[in-house]
Image (tube, rainbow, N blue to C red; front, side, top):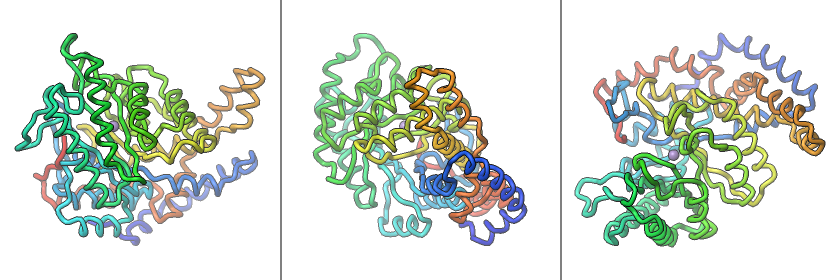
Length: 426
Ligand SMILES: [Mn+2]
């Protein structure tokens, strides 16, 4: 299925008047307060977030998995689904592949489909957290940290294979997330596991092309429940520094213990020029992988406030790789992704409304009340008309979820692909 321009125009027709009224009201107010509305809209339009190939089917838990039917059963269909989201929202212009779940058979054909849908290939992700069919060695007791040199070598080679696949598609980054760790005290020697991981990452790093980044993701627990080898940003940063200039820390919002101050982590990593990538999701308890902004929208805004500050004031930090890393059991996965994209754009727009000069002045006067007023004034602004305008300007729809439903996208996918299709992945 491909959404045509006429369908987008038809979906927008009944909403244009209300949109224009809401936009004019907000734009006038912002202009009076000294904001450059055109610049805000073009920054929103430029902001693109990668969709991971594994989020296009319904996610499962270890208790069960319930399909939404019409799921993509090939890499081609996965990219088509990203194209559907992108044509509605105009903010999902990239896909992030997971290897070996999504190894292309025909590179030329895959690249052509992606180009025709205006989709780029973002970071490629390696997988050493499960054993593949016919694999010689097992990752049951770890991969890059394993006590066995043969296992480590297999895991290193897999990462090099992933780099080569990504290189053929035009990716510019490798994301490494390890499930390595231990479930019980005494199972692992912490120092040996860390040192093995560092040495393995250095071996992988040698194959990172000159214009690539290596992104090292951390996570405090799960699937190991006593210790994780790369448990936090400090461990990730040490490993990145041990590899070199092209290695960076990747922050996944769900990979923190409850109440961690993620905005502070993001801020300091940017100051040090070492924040390379970002995974969006939301959580109530752990790595819940819920829709971005569905549980803690204010925290998402505070994180974006630091990101916007860093993007403006930290030229030492590179452009970030943005990706949604969420997937679960009870929503249509495409609607879920659309909701995440809207929440991300909303937080970004609100963060751009924070008057950084006024905030700095209030901080210098230790006017704590005013600092809070400035932040919350931006957070309480309804910025949705700006998002609508950014989408409209690029040829998208005013209301993505409404349009998705009125076009009966899921129904059409089921008619095309059938009910019993299951997306590859978790
Ligand atoms: Mn992640």
